[in-house]
Image 1 (cartoon, rainbow, N blue to C red):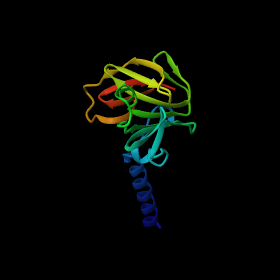
Image 2: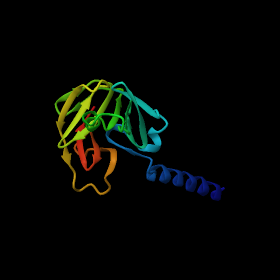
Image 3: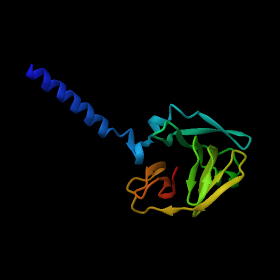
Length: 172
């Protein structure tokens, strides 16, 4: 009987350790979960519509958040080779949010957008390529493993959306 109890405890401990060490997801503030590409690939389409064209997504370069109340924010890099250079510079990723967000003092309603980092600015456009909001971005020289696109919890609350080492802070 004692051996069975030990085996149950060992199994439960191993499961708990595996869940805690899982590289697939990381918990942010308030039970929100930052998603990795393996999580978002099931939710994002292979191509998306933006400014009268269809662009293939780069699902390996995707990320998102599953908020504690079940709503999502999803974003993925896109192949903008068919777009003019002025549109392609502002449209680096497709950005879908089911909830309103706050970028600095600016509010972004739930919706589908194009986003991009242009010089020292972060730009959000609607699917017609009209500017919705713009703000200064920051460079994180201390970031150990920059990726083309990632979301991380911000130590002071909210989140950071990164493109390489450039990032902007946002919150729900």
